[in-house]
Amino acid sequence: MIERGLASLGRVVLDGLAGAGRVALYALTVVSHLLRPPFYGREFLHALMQIGWLSLPVVGMTALFTGAALALQIYAGGARFSAESVVPSITAIGMVRELGPVLGGLMVAARVASSIAAEIGTMKVTEQIDALVTLSTDPLKYLAAPRVLAATLSVPLLVGIGDVIGIMGGWMVGTGRLGFNSATYIKNTWEYLEFWDVGSGLVKGAAFGFIVALMGCFYGMNSGRGAQGVGAATKSAVVAASILILAANYTLTEVFFSA
Amino acid sequence: MIEIEGLRKSFGSKQVLRDVNLTVKRGESLVVIGGSGTGKSVLLKCILGLVPPDAGKIRLDGQPVTEATREDFLARFGMLFQGAALFDSLSVWQNVAFRLLRGPAKRPKAEARAIAIDKLKRVGLGPEVADLYPAELSGGMQKRVGLARAIAADPQVIFFDEPTTGLDPIMAGVINDLIRSIVSEMGATAITITHDMSSVRAIADSVAMLHEGVLRWQGSVQEMDDTPDPYVQQFIHGRAEGPITALR
Image (cartoon, rainbow over all chains, first blue to last red; front, side):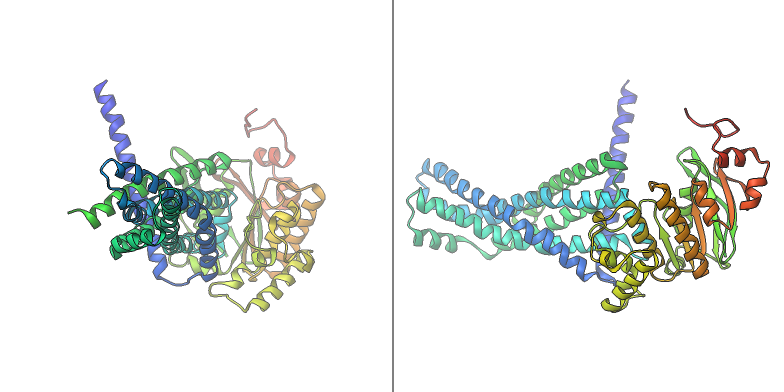
């Protein structure tokens, strides 16, 4: 009984390690394709539009409401210590260091990892990936590399814009509901915000963008057959991207800010 | 000339190809027949390198097709897929000119478009379909576009995977005639896999029957009709009774 349990546990661990190894090899191969010609500029620009520009509304709305809610929470919490005046600076720091990149990354994961996995998975089951190979085109280079590069470059931009919108959400609540003076709010926000607060969030954004596109491409290309296979690939891509984003966020926060 | 020697492929415990030996002469149109699940598609995929074989050698014009030489092989190659496998995000002409818009065979856009429209005309489609998307085409039109894409770069070797599956008999006849005339006129070496006997009679110079992972029989169309081989006879006449067992 115990042996059987240990064997099952061993199988799960080995499968997990094998999966991690496959993803790592896949990531290395995609990165190597980014460095070697041919480069598919049209596919890159298309991916930039799909991943970056079209994700802006959802990331912007997420940031706006998060910044607004954060200001309310900090005000309510700060009031217990008569520290209501920290609302502008803590809202800004919370947005740019943590909530902006993490929530932005998760929203992009939901929107983009699913879309990439479904698109590439459908291409796989309809033999379009095989067709690419027969047309002397490497699917990793043509499909994965442009998407991964586009996401790695565009998600930090999205995070940066989200930071501004999130801080604006806090300002709207701060000045409209909490009685802050507009100029003072902006001054406090600006004064206590350091370059690395913003920079670390943008670096996180790049890492999250890489993760999102990589997971979408990996699960899409390894999709099972039929609608069920594509559905499972899509679900796995979003789940894996979300978990990896949260894990990477913790790791990067340790690296950047541990004492 | 395509030579296949001792090709083997298993998926887990299931042996799909068991020592397949096959030769297709330059300019010959070979049709591989056999029931579903007999390894026809796997055979094509092994030749293309889409599925790595467990053992065996594949030679094109005497040169072994390996990972290193596969690019050269694919540059001389075209394929019509069972479901056409057109790229949804590209227009019809961009699908046809895919190879001409990127890679070593890259041409200026206007020239690539002109070639695509010419190839579409060759398969009986007018320039008005050039800017449509695959989703806007019927199944028969998609097959024609797939055929135009397969011949766009004037390949020396063409594979056809179940070219008439899912088509009505008239459209199937049209596609068969197109394949036959294009292969003859280009002088290309062709391998077609199908279980449609009308395709066999329209396309084939020679026929090979794959059964349970081995090449059961090979000969001309005339020899196919005359052979006493009970497997071939059961298959070409579509009889339920015979040595080939089917799940019922």
